[in-house]
Length: 293
Image 1 (cartoon, rainbow, N blue to C red):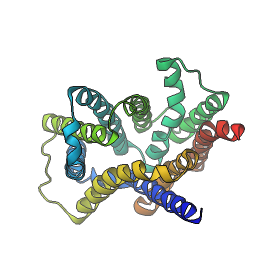
Image 2 (spheres, rainbow, N blue to C red):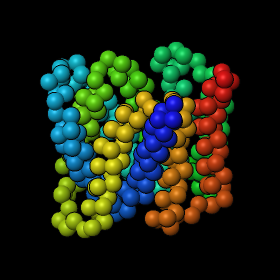
Image 3 (tube, rainbow, N blue to C red):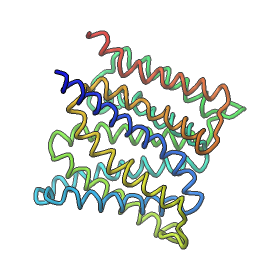
Image 4 (cartoon, one colour):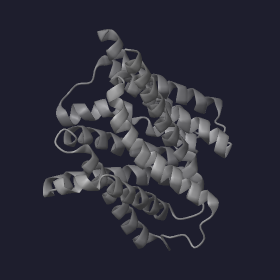
């Protein structure tokens, strides 16, 4: 029993470290795309991650087939669209705002579940969606109460993340999840490269400074490869409820790192909106579980 409790605490700590890396990437990416083109950055980031995943899980490649390539490519395309809109959003909005708006996917998923698989969301999910929409308006509206361009892009990103979550739930029950991840990250890298080659002056920076090296280490190795391996292996030692609760820290971490690394300070309205979004996410995620208990 003592050993089991200790394993659970270690698993929770490692899962929390994943949200720290995910949350930190918003401000790190925002500063990085000031030094190199947006899709060139995504291309380098995900090729590094893809190569690492190929090396780590090379023995699993013998299980690959046309069906998993097809479905993994669909996931990769959804992932590309979500990262594309998120990264471009960082050019127009504060990292902390983009982080909170990206977290909206938790509230959007129940809506899409209703439309795609005819599953009506619970009253708690509906409350969560309603609160999240209020929070979005407060965080992303300009002084004249129009939604900022960066805010719109971040919301579109959250929509594509929601589609990716629903499709992942479907495909992960059919295939090896590690193999599925290798394919989608590789497709993500390929699409980023194609977009960069067709619209940007270069992919490899003419001069790589220490900050870009730091950025690629955090975003490729820790926020992609490390995060995926930890999430997949550690969830067996803790509960789904605790895992979901820990992952709601990602938008909070984006605000913390936005302040620490970028000196970002939101208005009172912005912080209020972020708090309302987080409240909506927590209600949608945990109220049904608490009711069951």
